[in-house]
Image (cartoon, rainbow, N blue to C red):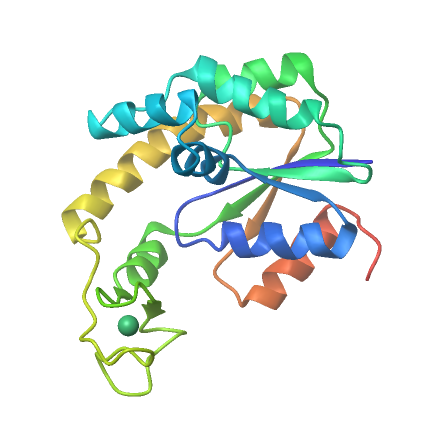
Length: 213
Ligand SMILES: [Zn+2]
């Protein structure tokens, strides 16, 4: 059984790395943000609450986040283990988790703020079809034009220098105490996320002591 949590700033490749690890070792990939999005799309009671909370610009309460994680793990479909992405978001959530479950490791994808800025500010979106691009590693063939529908690409409204600086500030403010807490339990494996996808994945597997696959 392999039980992991992955922590990383936006642009660190957290989703990609979790998916690769899950695929390689038959782990269940639990993305807490996706579970909330599912509830919104399915118009569940929780979905309505999430919608109201987001509309008010507030964060979803710890109780709801913890319940979603607990309910997901209670399904016990993780015969070989799991990797949780998007949780815990604060110290209290981390404490709740450690009281109820044991972990084999926390993967911390470390990326300097400067590199986050470079990656995130290179993101482009097609307002026509919703296709995502990145000017660093996923450039459209013709500059500034969507390859699928030909629409002009734009930057996301919240991908400005100022908005990103604020998101980074909040990320560090919330994440540092979580990492401190987890480090005291000797769980944290920090991996340099500035390298290529394959190199980062290989480093994660090596640090976790996983057999090659
Ligand atoms: Zn398009």
